Image (cartoon, rainbow, N blue to C red; front, side, top):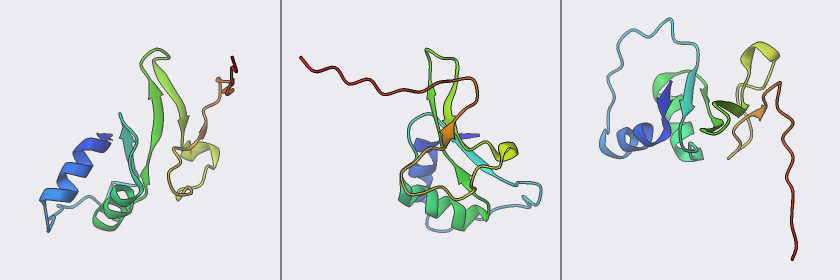
Length: 98
């Protein structure tokens, strides 16, 4: 698991990445802030595996949305999404108009 900011810094500074033998790497999970689409595409190209984002809140101590591979979620979600609701949470958007 890595932070989106770390990937973004690597993407902006490093022009060529020499990656060792990561034959056991199947997915790259990004935690922390949202992973922007350009960084996700760059990461998938250079690491050769799906880069999966999630939405984590400190208050919940758990991911709220994520790509749950074991539950059959898509490995290449649409642009700027961070997965599907994680089982156990009922995510609802409440709009308050005053």
